[in-house]
Picture 1: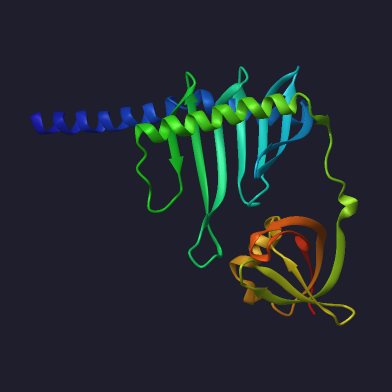
Picture 2 (picture 1 turned 135 degrees about the vertical axis):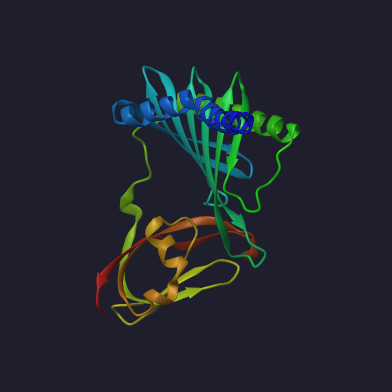
Length: 258
């Protein structure tokens, strides 16, 4: 009977650990689900915050004057997006996504981070980064300070923000043509031949998921007809000596067989 008792105890301990791992974030998941279920009923505002040289584009959702959710996009790299879920005006859960920097200058793997707060500090930090980093006490402390400080600043900016304000979509333009491929360099470029026969090229900086899918396997799309949504913008391009006006792709729609 003794070996069976030891096995039973080990199994019980394993399930206890798993249950505890779920219970310690149960409240966070409940708040996350409630906020996202009600988000359409909240007041939506936008604002910006400049922390030179970084510019954050902020979108917030307020319930009765209290900010419940913030989406902050980092303007200097176009890849960093951080979602804050707040309770009592302070971060409870933070979901962060960004692309790793690759040695060849190309866009690296997409990393997701989940940070859980309790009593004003991060107590659980999950990441998809490979190999998995080892976080120490000073890492938790510095990251807690970063997100709590940013959250406080963003809340103040959003409470002064504009309801429903957004960049007008009318600034975007459309080009139909045939996809020729992705040109790699200091920056990736979308190359295509327009219906007029001209070869055009667009910077790939801050596109949506439709373009990201092409970047995974661009060769499979070469020769296909497409409609590109793009815009002119002034961006900081250090390799070109600073700020310059460029044309960048926002999204792509495939039109069927060529």
